[in-house]
Amino acid sequence: MDAGKFKTGIELMENYQLRVSFNSEKIEDIFVDEPEPLGSGDYPNAGRLLAAAVGSCLCASLAFCLRKSRADVMSMTAEVSTTLERNDRGRLRVTSMIVSIRPEIDDPNKLERCREIFEDFCIVTQSVREGIDVKIDVRSPV
Image 1 (tube, helix red, strand yellow):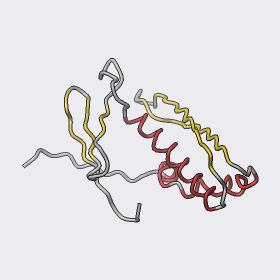
Image 2: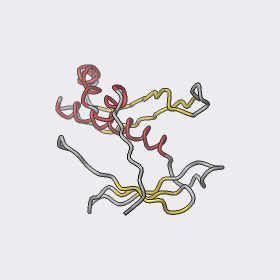
Image 3: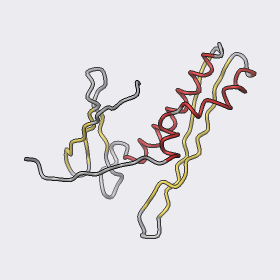
Image 4: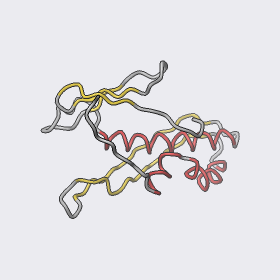
């Protein structure tokens, strides 16, 4: 992805189920939902998508670094353990994520250099760590 902007569309379908459109002919829409008892839990919620975004971004960054180092990446798996806790006002918040990545490569020595630098190239993880400026505009359609 180049530096710049992109838009993501969201449409409420029913109850708490939402259709997410990535405004791309190549990328299919996905659905999100809240877990029970609020929603049906049939689709991932925003917290799970955030964990998936962090984990997949880190895997892609590590794979890129390893391939630049001419390592043969035979497989890679990751697991993101996400902790939710209530804040002072009783609202649930994502308070931590632990990402465990398990790459299988032909030369383990090539992993050492990438281990030191790959995180810095992950757009999502570094943005979450630094905090993201979010502005909100709510108004009725004209």
